Length: 385
Image (cartoon, rainbow, N blue to C red):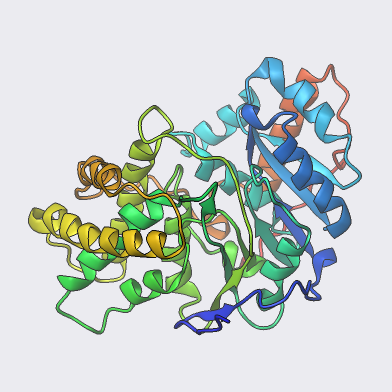
């Protein structure tokens, strides 16, 4: 039975126990795009949240105008306080542009908008909507350490489905990148690499935090959200304030390597976020040799994955994995301009302004009838002076 502790507190699912947690003092942020509309996975998530009964479920919604009304109507059908937050409406777009916050749109931007709306709860849980094995226990497990003194908790789980190892971007890109960076780092005083390495599935989209911590964090706009959040959590919570939680069996959608939303595109965003996080923490990166060191680290890990797969009777194709490594190596380089969204406590816009604009945009698309949205949104940003 596995119960090894990492440098961050590690809570294992040794039983099927659902721990007590203050779900009634938490908001849950579940970003969705139009592809989640009416899907079994999203329906399973929202139905499970009915049993959790958080203060609210904020759904940052990325969908075209003609789809957003029916999408919001579908969300109203669940017996939990769901608040859609349309991230692409004209008023919200204009508001953000006026405050200097226009720019690339992506998952991170959507989550940032949703977090702002959730900050009036004591705790915030963030997770994806594409889980095929979602359980109400996930929220309790993520909240448990946060309600007991930690500021930040990350979910982890094994990506083994259909007799195959998944989690490819984590296994084949993120982990060997950290190993390559660590091997070339002269100073042992820099702890960010050890911190990032302590998380068993750093690219998981599931985490919980205190509202006070979340109000301090800058957020990546796109696919670098997860690792960027870890870099910020290192700065503000550190080893002592962080935990990770075993979510057990967890299955969700898989992406192809190529294509506009494939793993190759994601690797560029994840690479930039990782390298920016370690540079922020004081690591000097030797970019001229990074790709070669990454390939060498990945090759060693692939040998380990092949042995592990064979040990468990799983299908494994080392040649295909090495081809992916070559694709990901092309994404390595110094980060471009810093386009992170500001911490909410320092943002030039308030959560209330965002919520009011998004509400009016959605109201227009639903024919002037705002359904299931509070009449007034108040500003609560923990720790704001």
